[in-house]
Image 1 (spheres, helix red, strand yellow):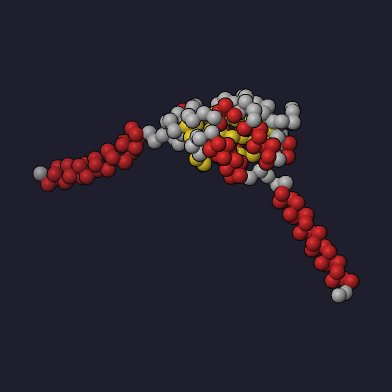
Image 2 (cartoon, helix red, strand yellow; image 1 turned 45 degrees about the vertical axis):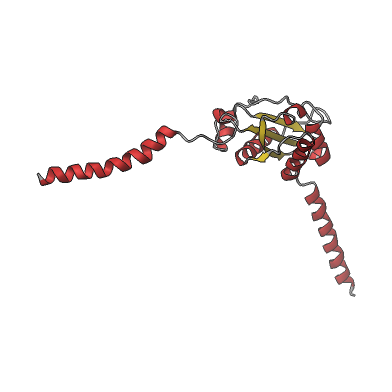
Length: 198
């Protein structure tokens, strides 16, 4: 084997190793975290949390807002759960996910900072801190998870109108925009034809 061929092989193996390492520290696997949270709930005989798309979207938006804030401790759990963090653009974050405050008011927002988002530390941050009281609550039936930088956000949802993270369809507007005009147009056409014929 020629010297040039050996260098190419060595370069290939080195690049491959770098890619593998970069992939390992790239980001937290939110699906794995949800599985871990559900295993924890199963140990308490609680139902599994459903994966809620709009809650995932919102959790990511909040994590994105927090990503440049430093961690103030090594265990995470810097922020107490609640639904309205002090972001001036909170309504905009909801709107990005097609939500508003009435769709989310019964949910619980749980942001935490864990350096490098080490999966075991992230999971224990939720199951062995003040956040566990929310995970132990059967009121919560779904979750959304997002992460950016050293921040992970778990958004717990309920099966109530105010916590399902499913935007309610305005019944009055759907009737007026679909039902009433569609029924009115044939009536108006029949009236015009009758007027013209008489």
